[in-house]
Picture (cartoon, rainbow, N blue to C red):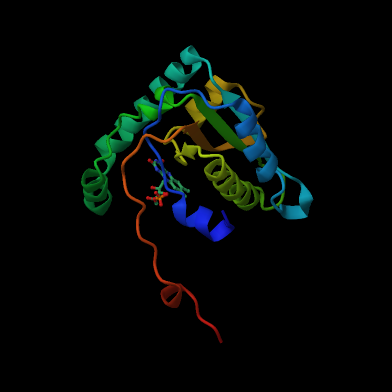
Length: 185
Ligand SMILES: Cc1cc2nc3c(=O)[nH]c(=O)nc-3n(C[C@H](O)[C@H](O)[C@H](O)COP(=O)(O)O)c2cc1C
């Protein structure tokens, strides 16, 4: 499949099959991600893969505590959108996905966040290529999670990627047309 077809096929997945993917497929995706460009070629990304049931359950508990507070505080347009989408503070994918991939950026590197998110983009397409799905889950309480994970202070948690075989019937959302987003001068 060429890159455009892969990108068109990829969609966020929040429900996963129980079947555990081959860890080599995830390593493949990280191998792709580390080929991304980065500021000063510092390669400021760092990945931690979690698969133990107890760890995933604890992480879900910490995240859901933050989500509860976030949902209680949310109002206006955001609240309406969350309701329309059927989202709630419950994040079952954090314990149900066979793997959770934590992605960190090194805070002392130039453009570290931009660089790490580029690598995340590479990673999403590589997972798609291997038939795997994920959701770019950005928790509300990064600090509590980082404390639990015990990483050095110089690293910032960017995203948690629950990974597994997709079991989500949601459609691929439409994208704007090229004419709407591209100006050729
Ligand atoms: C930076 C970023 C943060 C996101 N954070 C979340 C999140 O915390 N929880 C979630 O369920 N989806 C999250 N998403 C997924 C988006 O909602 C999703 O990509 C978007 O609705 C488009 O859907 P698609 O990926 O299926 O095309 C995030 C996506 C991005 C790029």
